[in-house]
Length: 415
Ligand SMILES: Cc1cc2nc3c(=O)[nH]c(=O)nc-3n(C[C@H](O)[C@H](O)[C@H](O)COP(=O)(O)OP(=O)(O)OC[C@H]3O[C@@H](n4cnc5c(N)ncnc54)[C@H](O)[C@@H]3O)c2cc1C
Image (tube, rainbow, N blue to C red; front, side):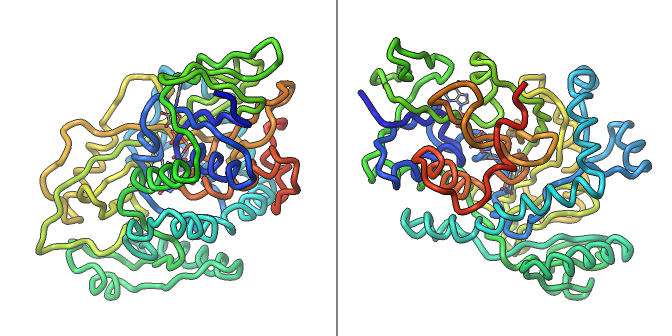
């Protein structure tokens, strides 16, 4: 079947690229080896993070770096066997986290985050998916006055850039979340973000919208991509041979497995994360999604129970699973949050595809006519899928994108 474009990868980013290409009048085929939204876009913490106007920098504090080396922290761990491979990208991440470089990166990042709510709201409206929003806002909690003071400073800075919040004292926290055990200095309730009760279901709702608008969804292996003599792209899907002059590679952490065959690769920092669901306790509800600032994990009330997600594990996506980090997080979380029995025995694991400059990568793949990519959204790909799709579709259609896309260009990593 001939199309105008093939999108490879049906995570949040790929589905949104497909929808926006379609909105520009292109006939689009969307290909994934699984059903839409079953990988990273399924397993995340489900927050549409309008407040995240600055990406996660590497903490350059010596105390943090030394304690990180012990590999016992709950927020960051690493695989020693992958350390040598990741050293170069991590060094570049460290440099990009220095104040001057970081300030510029954050200003660029903010141009995308600023569009995240409106772009999701529009798709949720069109896809009839508003019921998947559990609530507006979430809490970041701290136990020490010093950490809380720093968080309040960040919140005030962000308020000057249009991010809304409410400051909570320890007493306010106890009132808002009476099921929590222990003393907290206080919290910030970020009031703009949307907490989604099932992230995978939201991607699937968007994919259904794509199908209703005459897009075609196919099962298939993207690695089988090839070029015809006429220079068109071809993929063997389970039900059809698909052909198009344009292809968008949106395979999340697997993107460069494909693009490297065409000479394009990037120094990705894979930040793996785990989650487990716990049965909620009916008499002890958790009212909001909570980021536990001291320990770097999230507890989110979701369709399948309370979902505990971990911070970052620096390890290659295909390296063996090491669930020590989630077990350590669970031990702490059990003392504080109303977690019932584990719903799954085995934790889910996925990989945040992070770039050393903390920015996503989308646009034309250098030196490969007709190939585009959209990946590398790190900690906020669930948030940034719709705006990425909108901007990428504008580029493919030759129209001016409404945000300056140059900072996100794939060419910044070209050899
Ligand atoms: C623990 C954790 C918590 C997170 N919390 C948040 C959050 O609260 N908010 C937020 O905004 N972001 C969050 N993120 C980040 C976010 O989940 C990712 O940035 C985002 O899901 C990436 O989307 P994607 O579409 O690029 O990748 P994916 O969702 O991984 O999609 C890639 C798709 O490519 C497909 N694919 C791969 N290889 C092939 C192949 N060979 N052939 C065919 N198909 C293939 C996969 O099946 C998959 O469907 C979190 C991530 C983790 C791990």
